[in-house]
Image (cartoon, rainbow, N blue to C red; front, side, top):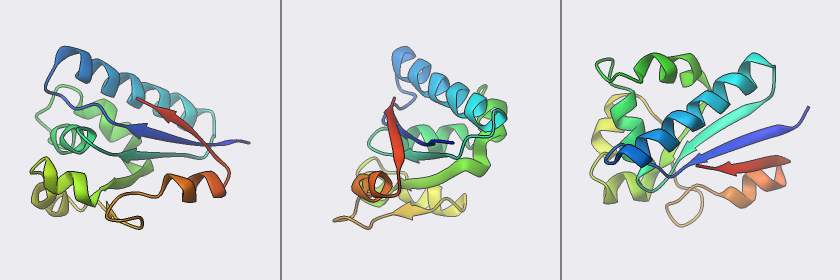
Length: 118
């Protein structure tokens, strides 16, 4: 079965961004239910999205909770740039930094993941 990495770049600031973020979580949920190995990486504004959705008061939190066990982490650099590094660390989220402070997508490709971007 093919491995899938969902790279989430969308935040929650706009209606469009939240829509892309929710769509990514729906895809993750479907992949998980069908038994696919799936990982979610939050990068760029997606780091803000992760911080927002991890909050139980957010209206999309139940969907996030359904796939929270598949979150590989968030970009260390971008979490700082978007001001959510401390929040993500407090939530126990992994901050990824293997390539110049960012997640290594090449590493996921080398492991056979198909990358879908939202």
